[in-house]
Amino acid sequence: MVRDRRIPLKPPPNVVVVGGTSGIGRAIALSIAQHCPSASITIVGRNEAAANAILSQLGSNPKFIRADVSLMSEIRAVTRKIDKVDMLILTQGILTMAGRTPTTENIDNKLALHYYGRMLFIQELLPLLRSSQNGGKVLTVLDSVNGNPSKINWNDMALENTYSLASAGYHAISFNDLAIQHFASQPENTNVTFTHAYPGVVRTPLADSLPFWARLPLKCAFTVGMGVSPEDCAELMVHGMLGTDKGWRCVNDKGETVTKKKPANEEMVEKVWEHTSRMISPSQ
Image 1 (cartoon, rainbow, N blue to C red):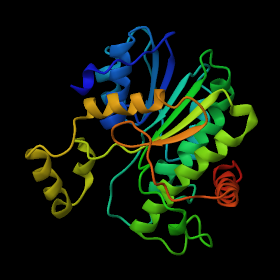
Image 2 (tube, rainbow, N blue to C red):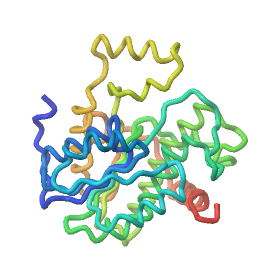
Image 3 (cartoon, rainbow, N blue to C red):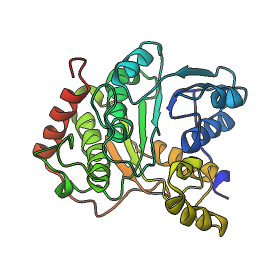
Image 4 (cartoon, rainbow, N blue to C red):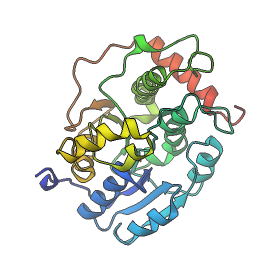
């Protein structure tokens, strides 16, 4: 079984899991606690009841920080409450058919969760990740397989005027690819690795938020055994993160390196980061 895979976690790491109250994030937090009961695990999310239900299973020093991580202001407040981190795992997300839905900070909710907020977590916690004894590790779980710079609308990167579900999806996954390349290219981050992972089809409650007509096919597929359990997915995602020895890497649903990625040049990487910096700045 996948869950028999050995995951070496020594010395006991300080782990932050954003989106850790449900789905893949919850499973990753539980998996790390199982492999290393002495790990210090902090989960960040909105659902305090769901967090309380698993805190007792998260080793010797569990912690929950409640926050709406679609808001950059709340992310800054959260990161000020964290004083150690060796592994930063970003799994927050939403599955919805709704069009552009601005937050109170005027960033689309899906892009805030799937991209901008993730990059702000990384940026704010990088000083702690750099000081990690064994080297910091960042894992963003979204879609490392289908990113394509040619699908980016370079004239409307925030999709304020040309929004569609497809364009939001391509922007989020392609931006994740390019942003981790930016972080890895910075000399001060040589002690930190950055991994973007594709979880594949996972049997989580995420689809419950979809309309009935969209939810039914997924439920039927899950019933006949399609997809993997969150527990098996978690093992593979952690395996992929730990397998990134230096710099950045995209891994597939088996935790192995994605090949045949669409190429991106340095200009694309820097343009995405310049845009991102503006979007996540306090003055946005």
